[in-house]
Image (cartoon, rainbow, N blue to C red; front, side, top):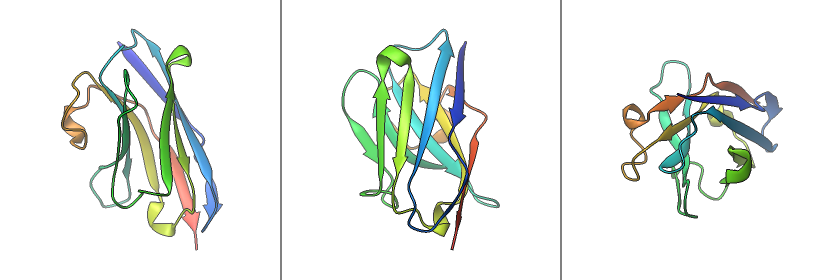
Length: 124
């Protein structure tokens, strides 16, 4: 079983930057995709960014391209999400996730493991 633990969420202002971290533990996967999703109140969970565990391939939602950067440290079993120029519409609970497969990045129900989430609130 894989355990994922997010950290770094907090209240920030429009235009601020924030870094989220996801630490994986337990029987960690050595392949597949690590991703960040987010869910705002009353909305469905949506894909934000993903990175392949064994390559530099990344994928981003159009709404965050150019502002967010995902990276990983395999030795530390950690995935980071650097968020710049934050906007009120980025307000959500951000979840770290992992899947064994290497396709269909954006479909939440295909991910095998999830963290508890960390709240990001961007004030205007």
